[in-house]
Length: 238
Image (cartoon, helix red, strand yellow):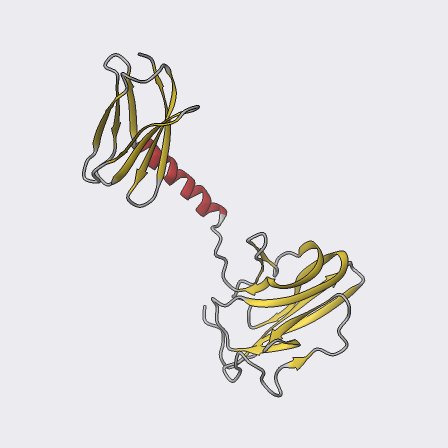
């Protein structure tokens, strides 16, 4: 959804320090604004406290920041605390951004929090200039996407068959037509690789002698041309 160009796009971010003091920062968007200082739009910070927060424009601190709207941009929030304390981020108002996601991104934890819906609280002590950002897109997969990816990975692993034929002393690996294998290794749990071979990506049926291996459990590792790795256990009994 494209924001309305004719109306002000604005959000008010509250940052509370130990529930004793709250700094409110305003982030606004305009086609007339730049990423630098905009006279009569941006407002500098005055009376900075020992624990405080601000936007950064040209290495200076501001409490109001006007910018062009870019959905893929990460907008840094500078923050400092003079001792260990709980810091609480939350949105108190947004104008004409109702259809936009608004996240607080914590780069240290690689975590996105929807601060339109919930607070983000964290214990902090120090000066933080490249840790916290306002974001409008979330690069992390949703729970539904995680479940789908997990199911697809399980299906992929199950599609690769590994057979240990102890009567013939051979290991066989079979892969589907759409899978290209570039390397197969077999590892003894204690002694490292006992088989390590580059293979042709056009082959779909691989066979290796295991008659010279000691009776033990081994790990078969299959590496594909698209850098996926599948590992499966076999038991060798000669």
